[in-house]
Structures are given as structure tokens and as C-alpha cells.
Length: 164
Length: 451
Ligand code: HEM
Ligand code: FES
Image (cartoon, rainbow over all chains, first blue to last red; front, side, top):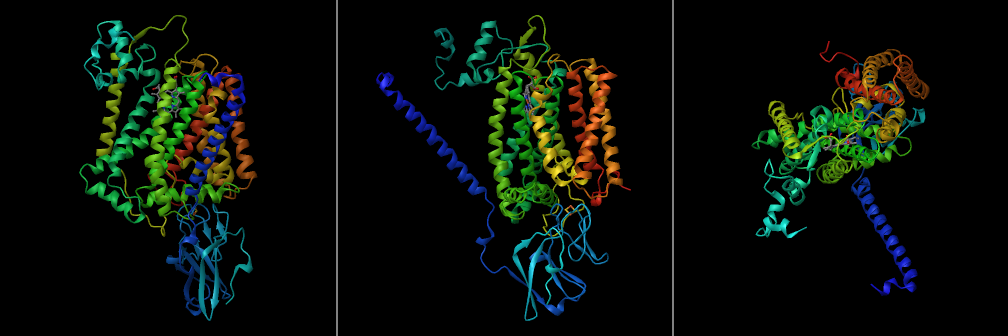
């Protein structure tokens, strides 16, 4: 203890204090990093297997129809002109699952009454955004939907429709 | 410490007596009394003597102590439930049903947990109101107000994470709705929601995350912060009291305050047990991600924000206003702590009148605003109609109230600030009641008893 009080040791003490403070900050940063890594949303990539969903053959879907695919969490909408759109079933207002109403020919959200047309466009508030889309492709008359990626969109555009 | 103080511990090697030191209700002398307090673990937790004015029930209504009682009940009933509950989507709902139907006293314990949690939120809010309206948030008590705000957030977090665990339709969709509100936060909203859910949608990862927060992180944090909170009350010299010229009259903690606390605690436990036995805790159908219930609402303590979302631009409703409200609440000691009059309810007679006026004004104005917005708002909530305009209207109403209280009622500054806080607090409470009871299918306005 005595030697530590001598004047020569002052720089050493200051150095050690900085060292401890620095190391302490490193420990805090490391801990925060570990916690952040654990809190990171689990990635889908970890799930093996194809994310391509086979909906069926093109002529199973009559023009002007909407078909639900609960297993893929989407609706396949065949427009009057024969174009295809895959709409995610999650309401863009607050995430409820929207059912298709055959009688009203629109999606009606049970939670807060948002409505969407067969292209996913908002017909009635409170939702502000069209339903999310999934990519559709038609190969040899088979309709396939890519479940790996949901596309958010601000508005409907004709280019979003897949022509068979 | 003299050898004299040690005499009665001479053959107490394990030191038991320091924990449960015999506590005669009437110690023989003042010296005995202070020795008892200093050398026994249990009695040192509370002061030796307390001011007789401060222990009047009408002064604090024992709301802080009642919060603690409920917190203890939550821990006890929670640990028991952990013995049966399984935090996996496929088994969660079934394990809760097992608690309800196959475990002896399972439904009672579950009911106690449910009622303690809901009562705790209400009691904490009343406690904060008590502290505010008796002006107990100025000076050294500022820190304790902020600690208290931390406790409030922690308890809300615990209540919300617990809400998901039964994995029934109500739980699944309330959490879906509430976490989806995060999506409206600009730029980082989607990332915040994914972090809260532990993935892109509500599922097993969410359940494990919520379970961990609910059963270990938050309870441990709350216990530590609550201890700090109590210590700060002691350090401030006990609860707030009106400034008096002379030393306040003091009475012994034991038995005077102790019997009051004990009896109130027992009454609270009795209320919880009766509610649990009579009503239990609700358990609906198992969560079905493919079918949303109509209407889907957030838990009652968040449903006021959901009501804002009906009327306002989403960013205003889920980010700007809640953040503003939170900051104002935390910093209340710096915004509206009274300079004088603290310790008396509402500071003064005029203060009381001003608060009653503000409460009535908010009770009348809020439903009117809601109805007007419901009828004439197109549902299109842009920045102007859903942000600037309503904020300007509400600010103008608050300013008008302030001017009225100033000019007509002649309320001083501190009293008027108290009234402004009352106005907004009661307004939010009214929004909560409207959203909880007056909104039915499709969130349409209607009477709770249906039409
Ligand atoms: C777990 C929740 C809480 C518990 C267990 C608790 C407990 C207590 C207790 C036992 C007291 C002593 C006086 C009394 O009983 O009223 C107290 C005082 C106080 N509490 Fe809390 N409290 C909680 C939450 C809060 C909240 C949410 C706030 C406000 C943001 C708050 C702010 C204060 C302040 C400022 C005091 C000192 C008041 C004075 O000196 O008059 N507490 N609390
Ligand atoms: S979640 Fe669909 S309208 Fe609110």
C-alpha cells in the first residue's frame, strides 16, 4: 500500500484506471452484442426445403375467382382478364387474417372492418396499404407461388399481375 | 455496539433472532423499541416511529403497500403455474386447460394471478394519482417518481407478455394487434415488430421470448427496482406531509402503522381470492392463426392507443402521442410539481375545484370528439386531418380550460397545472373506456349492452 502512494506511481495509477474503465466498457459492449444477437429475429433461411408452393393447374381457377390457400397463408386471385395475383392473407391495418366474402366480392377484415378488392386494393379504411403480394409463376400450366418473400406495396399497379 | 446489545443473542449462533426477533407489540421502553428495530432484520425494514398524520388512511390510502401485496401474490401464484405451464404453441393452451380442470386448486391459483395482475395495474395508476394529487413528487421525491414510472412500465410489460401465454384466440390476436401497431413507426417499425415477435409472424419464437421476459427478466428487475423505490421513500423521510411549523407528532410503527398495513394487506388478499374463486380467469378457444375474432382488441391497458388509431394518422397515434405522453409522465415532477401546498390533497380547495372541473370537462369532451370524428372523419387520416387538426383542437380546448380556471376560478399556477394533467389523464381514461366497452363488431361505436 505504501509504495502505491509514492509520486512516481501516479501515471501508473491513471493508466490502470483507464485500462479498467476501457475493459469495463468492452465487457458491456460484448454483453450487449450477445443479447442483441439472441434477440435477432430468427431467419427463415434456417428452414430447409423449397418455398415454392404448387397451387394447381391454371384451369382450376376460373376468371373472376378468389381461392384460399390456408397452408400457404395466401389467396390466389384470378382476375376477369385471366391475370393472377397471390395476396397474403394478413390485413395491412393491424395484422388480422382477412377472409374473402363471396357475396360481397371483397375481402372484409373482421377486426376493424377494412375492406379490399380482389386485387388487394383498399376499398375501406382503416387500412392504408394494399394487401402484400407473393410472386406467382405459371410453368407448363401449373401455378406456383413463392412463399419465401412477401412484397409490400404502396399501391396497385397493373405490372403486379402475372399473365399466364 | 456495546456488549450489552449482544446479551440476548449469546446463544443464537445462526442468528435466527436477528431475523425473527421477538416483536412484542408493546416494547417495555423506548430503548427496547429502537434496539428491536436496529437489530432485527424484519423490523429494520420499516421505521421505528412514523408521523401520526402520515398514517391516516385518507393520506395515502395505502395504495403503494397494496401494490406490493399484489406483486407478492403474483410471484407466488406465478411460480406455481410454472410447474404446469408449457411454453410451446402446440401445448400451451392445453397446459392452461390442465391447470383449470385437472390440477387441484389450479383454477384458483390461475384466477389469483389474473386478478392480481389486473388489479395491480389499476392500483398502481391510482397510487401514481395519489402521489401526484398530494404533490409528493417534488424535491428529493423526483427521483422516486421516475423510479415509479419504471415500475409502471415494467408491470405493463409483464402484463402484456403474460397476456400471450394462454395461447387462446384472445391472447393471439391481442398480441398480433398490439405488435402490429409497431409497424407504423417510421423507418424502424418493421424491424421493431420482428424483434418483438422473434420472427416475421407470431409463433413459437414469440412465445418463448414472452415467456422468458414474463417469468424471469421482468420479475427480477421489478423486485430490484421496487426495493429501490421503498428505500427512496425512507430516505425522503417518509411520505409527503403538509409543511407544519412544529415537529409532527410521532407514533410507534409497531403497532400503529403495522396493524393498518397488515389489515389492508389481508383485505386485499381476500378480495383477490374471492374474485378468483367467483370468476376465475378466462380461457377461450385455442389460437387459430387463420381466423380472427371480431372485433380484435388490444389488452384493456393499451386499448386507448388503439382508439387513437381509429381517429389519427398512424404515426401520430402509435408513435408521437404515446412518446409524448410517456415523456410527460416521466418528467411530471419537472413539469407540474407544486412549489407549495404539497402534502394536502389537490394542494388547496381551489385546486380541488379546478381538478373536478377538468375531470368533468374531459369526460364530456372526449366522447363528443370521438363521435364527431366517427361521423364526419372520412376515415382517411392524413397528416392534416389526422394529425395537426385534432392536436390543434385538443390543445385549444386545454388552453381554454386553463384560461377559464385562471380568469374565472382564479386558480393559481400550480393548481392549474394539476388541472391540465387531470384533463389529459381523464381524457385518456375516457378513450380507454370507449374502446373497451363502446366498440363492437368491426370496431363500430355502439352501446355495451348491444342493440
Ligand atoms: C410495483 C409498483 C409500486 C409499488 C409496489 C409502490 C410502492 C410504494 C410505497 C409502499 C410507497 C409509500 C407510500 C404509499 O404507500 O403511498 C410509495 C411511494 C411513492 N411512489 Fe410508489 N409504488 C409503485 C409504483 C409507483 C408508480 C407507478 C409511481 C409513479 C410514477 C410511484 C411513485 C411514488 C412516489 C413519488 C412515492 C413517494 C410519495 C410520497 O412521498 O408521498 N410509485 N410507493
Ligand atoms: S386488422 Fe384488419 S382492419 Fe384492423
